[in-house]
Amino acid sequence: MAATLKDATAIVGIGQTAFAKRLPQSEKELACRAILAALADAGIDPGEVDAFSSYTMEETDEVEVAKAIGAGDVTFFSRIGYGGGGSCATVGHLAAAVATGQATVGVAWRSRKRGSGPRPWKNTAVQLPTPGQWTRPFGLLRPADEIGMLARRYMHEYGATRDHLFNVAMACRNRANENPAAMMYERPLTREMYMTSRMISDPLCLFDNCLETDGALACVIVSAERARDCRHKPVYVHSAAQGLPSQHHGMVNYWNDDPLSGPAWTAARHLWKQADFGPQDVDVAQIYDAFTPLIPLSLEGYGFCGRGEGAAFTEGGSLELGGRLPINTGGGGLSEAYVHGFNLINEGVKQLRGVSTAQVPDAATCLVTAGEGVPTSAILLRS
Amino acid sequence: MTTAPDKSPAPAAPDTSAASADALLVPVPDEDGAPFWEYAARGELRVQACTACGRLRFPPRPCCPHCRSFDSEWRRMSGRGRIWSYVRPHPPLLPAYAAQAPYNVILVELADAPHIRLAGNLVACADAPLDSVDTTRLRIGARVHVAFTETGGMTVPRWILEKP
Image 1 (tube, helix red, strand yellow):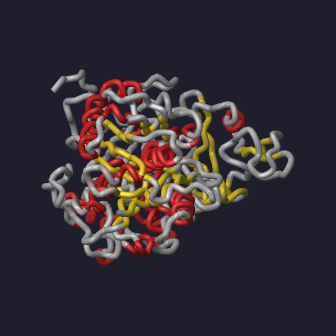
Image 2 (cartoon, each protein chain N blue to C red):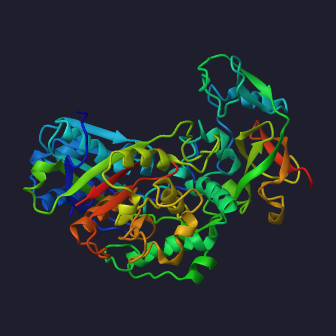
């Protein structure tokens, strides 16, 4: 029988720091605080940690983290590339490691001072070679410009409007307004604010862009057997997938037959193939939202609607609590915190524990996705 | 709480590239892309093609993803195409771009190879600034043709409306 990850492991601990435009602590300290909080939440001693996974963009490495928190001998460590596309793969890699006996207690984390630190696109030295030579000299400088290009085409092909993108921003903001830890907790959004806000990369305005945040999060993964002895109800990793489609070009995916079919489609095929349930059975979703257009594109990619129907899906309060598919119930990257999507993982765990600040009643299944438009990843969680 | 040295905010556009901070970025070719820019300097728009199976590929790369041949040539394009999409970037931007913002960036699907969409700028004439075309003229589907201009010692393509 082929090995399977299905429900073999569980997330048993989650931790986070405060989220703010500027935090005084270093990224390293924030990482340690989030990780120790996650381990305390799980009721597992840091000396038992023997596996780590994070993003290639994470600046605090395993050596620093392991020695700071007093980890034991570490036998598995991995890094996933492509910025926010790697978020869910940190959990996926640890699930695979634990399920196959490479390690027993895995910690995934992301710590970032994107609020007070530099904007990566301002570094003209490292990003100009391939594929930057084909885009950056022409003023396609920032991720917002690169995704804005796909968004405009999507709007043109399928009749999507700024109102559809507003529906996404509004759903996330409404959930953030219920979440005291969210950066936008006491900052309601109105349609007029959205429609009159400044453009960042037309057609994308300020509110189509995620926040800039200092903060860190972590979670702890162990075997399903071990999970039963932990402090909280286990949240099982039911399915995990990564996606790098054939002839994909990263965020500047302009040179193939269908730029609007992104990595979500590839990850989704594998994710659902391994799962006991389908999109219609998902109670709540945490969908990577660095930019609002990623939501309709991801809704299509993960099979919640057909190609070109993602914008229409957002109508009628579908993404709100009580709607067809409540999303980003902590506020997401748009309104809770932008920490490369790790807050979406922890929010998924909160939903399945039944302790979210915007709880979906009896939520038992949750899809969490990583950045669409770059090589991506996704996990299905179940209680 | 220990107070670690804080990361200071980004200095204004640290620039270690060939261009100065107040100039537009110039392409930094890699080995595979160099011929594109060499042909551009001669006023020719050329795309890498597989010598074995004849298929065009972009961005250029060492071998053909269809037949895996390492032999390639550079095929001259008509220089005509249509706008597939566009954005109008607003600040915050690098200084040279902020000075012209909001400007346009377009993707041009080549008439000779519609799956190849070159990023560029729609301008009134080859040497005109990036904001030289009225935004009302920006339209998906509009026909354009290539022109070349020199910037920072490199020749780069620009795009001009067929019907100005």
